[in-house]
Length: 493
Image (tube, rainbow, N blue to C red; front, side, top):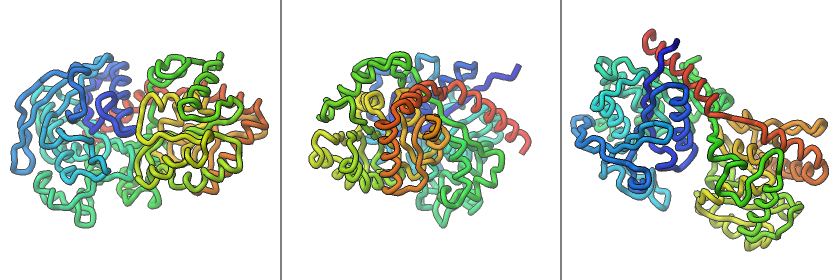
């Protein structure tokens, strides 16, 4: 019988404690799925100011803990809690780095200037924690650039350590567009020796690139969908990392994210106005009516309602949508709701849209978890015009809620949505290929035509979509296989 693994995950965010995007969802769900199949997992993350210690029963665990950064010893404390699934979560308390509003940037979306030091410290302190509590991991699993230095620290400083010396390193790339590239003035503090500041390791045009270093040092690298793993091997999609990912060969793979259906299922969802299922969709009509009321739209169950939940960013294609949505509203009888924040010009544009199209368009600038659930349940279709999308979760939620996705065929969107077949009525959504306002307009028009003119097809697609399942149980098995390959690489390469 294969040995059960001890896994330490280090990440900058994790649901339900701190979240800015899909990374937090993965780090919140994957450890529980791994624990479920018999592995022992601990998670290490920062103790941000926003985390409510009383709410999550977070208690002091270790103090003080010394962490060497370059030639300086930093001091911190560690707190911990245990999830209902039995996963132990440790929080690094370092007020100089984490006791502030915001995870990565201030209220105006300006990155904190000390981010390179904050997250180098997180990576190093997670490894020190393993030593201090005697947790001997088989796998150290880092996530994105914020903790990508952990594999480098393992190789450079802990290769002969009694606790960490046998640990294999694993890096998950959630979004290759963010790499953690900083001035070399921070390198002394990082403390990875100047001999490693080379173009094949950590150096990138005179700067230090955290993600590049993680790719080079990790025993195994993955990203969060099979298609994105292929896209990021190309110069067009890899943001400069294609040569290094291609050098990994078969040690760079795509593993599709799962979904926590205990949180995102219309049968169980406690946040939506009415529950419903594939066998009884009456509750979806109620959800649509209440969503229309909440966004001050005309209450009409016949009109197709398009929903968007997104960061208002270039990657997500919301600038492209701004070039198409008014034409959609003027030429088609549809309604539109949006929940999101980000680019200030796009915030102003979408905030003003309901004024220009009263009863037809609604928007909330910001994020509200309940409203997100209402949109998934109450909309008829869900629009994701991303320029690139490593995995995406909202299109998977939408499938489960019978809200047909309209997506650009990229990354995980292409992997999870099956194209509509106008002849047979097959498929689970509508895909377009060119990143343009023109493509958005005509694909939404195609979906609206199916809604009005081929209702039997639409209903078949809703049934098929709600029957799809992207479970973390399946993803956890794939991660286990990749972990064992990383361990083999650690021993043989």
